[in-house]
Length: 329
Image (cartoon, rainbow, N blue to C red; front, top):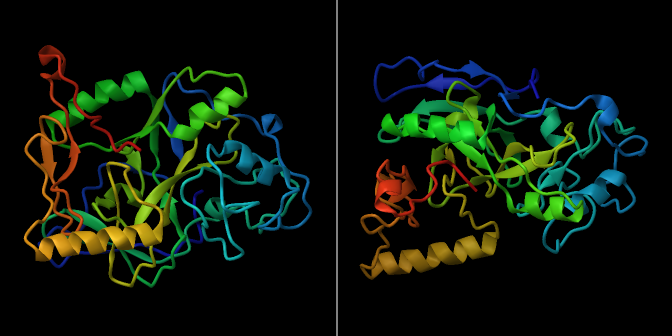
């Protein structure tokens, strides 16, 4: 996960005189576990496959392929692993279970994509309205692994405390690890979810903390489990949804409402373009996402006018419920 062979990330600014983004965080691709979070398991506690060489992408015999099937909560259209022979993600709606240190397969195994690190060239640039953002420095195919949303792994209680402070400064790098598959999988193991977790990239993180929001994103987070005995503590892995052209900004939805089917995304864009031509452009009503709306500047045809809701300290007193303030899926 340290990515020693990853292409360097250039920093460019043609907007103002800032030499680089505020370097106010410790750079790492790892999850730094906070108080109350289980320690990373020893290798002896992990379970791996017995494959020799590389695991075939369409394998239905590999133990890790079987684990992939166990983690899914819905019917999949593919068998075996979620990666194709090029290491690109075939489906985005299911968690990934990669081979780990306890597996007999080789390091070049096709089911170790995130562990091999980022392979695409990126740039961090200053934008006119959206602060710093991340851009493609080369053409990137759909399904390509980009990086992880790293940071401090916190308990839900600690995240709530930090979130209130961050909201006062209109800054929030919290991402709730509340994927649907977690409860479904634990139920099959006759276990209950005892603790929820959140990743905080405010003080610890990597370049992915600069990904801006878009109501029509070209990437999304997919939970990825490896090297951990706890499926409820996955890595938050970014993959490209669409082919991204060199120079395009890489974005994801802070609301976690991404449409993963390419044809459905195209159809929705066509509908919204038609509405725009007819003067019926979709915009968010005041308070549509809670008491405090953060304006969206994504500029896409699908723009809803708001990125997320920051919540309000008055919510509890008024008896009203606001949306989560986090980058939650």
